Amino acid sequence: MNKSSWQSRRRHGRRSHQQNPWFRLRDPEDRSDSQAAQLAQDSSHGDDESPSTSSGTAGASSVPELPGFYFDPEKKRYFRLLPGHNNCNPLTKESIRQKEMESKRLRLLEEEDKQKKIARMGFNASSMLRKSQLGFLNVTSYCHLAHELRLSCMERKKVQIRSLDPSALASDRFNLILADTNSDRLFTVNDVKVGGSKYGIINLQSLKTPTLKVFMHENLYFTNRKVNSVCWASLNHLDSHILLCLMGLAETPGCATLLPASLFVNSHPAGIDRPGMLCSFRIPGAWSCAWSLNIQANNCFSTGLSRRVLLTNVVTGHRQSFGTNSDVLAQQFALMVPLLFNGCRSGEIFAIDLRCGNQGKGWKATRLFHDSAVTSVRILQDEQYLMASDMAGKIKLWDLRTTKCIRQYEGHVNEYAYLPLHVHEEEGILVAVGQDCYTRIWSLHDAHLLRTIPSPYPASKADIPSVAFSSRLGGSRGAPGLLMAVGQDLYCYSYS
Image (cartoon, rainbow, N blue to C red; front, side):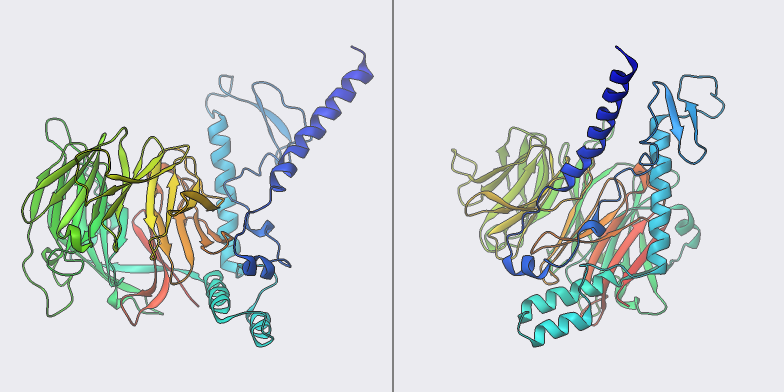
């Protein structure tokens, strides 16, 4: 092969490599809300590109790749990858990727501190008011866009946590947080330094700006087993208990535990603080759990097991078992109809009709399918739509009447982690934390990515943030905002 032919092939290969991302970015975004699409015609979506994409290799695209070597665009030279002569400071593709992601995270944090993000380019308070006065915006669309503006103005502030044991706060790490129905309490699972987990409840009624201070109420309950799933349970009254699924350890079987919130000192609203039922059910290998608020399944909870769903009545102890073809990783009860929705490792989503019992084949009411393991299912208020996410990073909105996917929310990152979804229909938003430790907020109505929030901590598998969003943090008179727990710290992204 002559020299000119080799150079021509090289230029052609480089040009096609550079064009591939362009074709990916030109994929049209499916928007079913025609009014939101009309409002976004003059807006640009380039601002919402996922931060998980690697940008450090862009500067090195003009230099040839050498097998076993890495080109550093800053130092403008090649470095040998492992194995090689520089084992005292080894370079691997994973370490290079982590360095690029950390550099991008720090840059985004700096940008967030300096300037306010814009949810939709071209829209601000004055332009929205003018469009509303001219009749281009109805009341519903105006409220949704106004809320998006507030989301773009949320500022990060660290919350001061007080406790009877301040030394524990400096060493214990947040595993997860879960707000109750009224968003005035926050149940926490913390990984302790000596191993295992302990529980606590944070009273959010004292979460007031500008000084953000809360108190964590703890108890002596401690477990050395992994907490697989948690949900609030309403046995005596609304959110009177916490239901926990614990993984088995060695010869100790797994179990589902009902933990009364009254065990945490001053954790319950005054006037209805009473002793609660503390009970534990021996359940092998529980992956997920859900509490029923449906009157036809009163005082019942469900646990998703390996190839089985177990429905348990707390008062009578009666159990029903439903066989499945895969592990059940996500569950939620419908409120208006007696249905239990389940998401499986196989990607199947199915509903159990509780009226049919476990005999025969009629108990499977609805069946949907993802291409990967389903990690979260959320039923919308009218119970005609269901939101689901999977381990391929896909978030889909399903119409339960037609069993078809009507919308997808792009940008979420997941490969194998159990990551929840947070749907807030009143504010019209969807919140999810990716495995890359970025918190993303979408518009429910047109799947537009409104904001991407980097983690205050360096991204790692052990420090994936846990979040809780509410328009009334601390109760009915509380302020709207996002709570983020990561490491030993709790942050509040409140409206300015």
